[in-house]
Image (cartoon, rainbow, N blue to C red):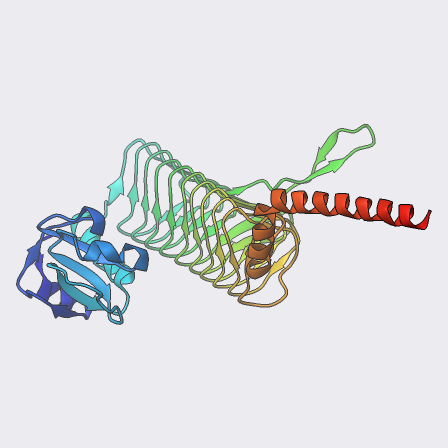
Length: 352
């Protein structure tokens, strides 16, 4: 990358404050800025770095008001974080060209259909009646089982496994070692105490523009599908159980899990290490804070929940405040109990 502030503003639809001709060739966090680098500021808690950074250009929001002076040239855009993401994606497309061709070690069934301009890497296995769309890249050691479908312009990193009859839409990214369509956790207890496996006869449907993180597992439905709607984003090491449905543009951070048959609405945010029990309904636009345990369905869209067990965030914060003061409260209650006992004793003595 080698770009001036003026060129950057034109590319991102922004405006320049400062030296429009200054050029940058690299990126840096605003607190680690150095000459020749581009930084961005979107979180107000990092504002103080703006006035000391050595970066030559900083992306900032249009509505940001300076409370000091800076030596950096500012490029104002509607959303600095989004603008940086768009810029990085443009550069990635220019520098990282899509691969094409089929490695000779790949095993592809005669009945499989492979689209145009695809890449099939070393030791990939593609089973009978699999369909792979145009411009899709499948890296080494991936396995696509019978009747699986992968759409156009997808990217499957090393070790991805897609079980039989599962469907992945267009423009999806599946990171290393994620698993689509493994069996849901279904067992019936027998009279002798042993478990009888419940067949998992459904599948997984992943709609368009979904991204699934490394070692994340999406279980197939026991009857009917597990569904990830359009635009869902899942982080690494997540477990999605059988017959779960995630609504459009819902995002979930790492190390969380959702139990079977829970329906999550659209545009929800689920924080890291959170868990949702089975058979719940989570309304649209719900936010679940990190390390939260959802044990009940939500009551209205747009709420924020926190804690184990979860509470609306205002109640959770009040509860946390009380919890922090429990030692003092306990001492106060103990003192009051002693005073009550002394008063009782005095009353008894006066009445004697």
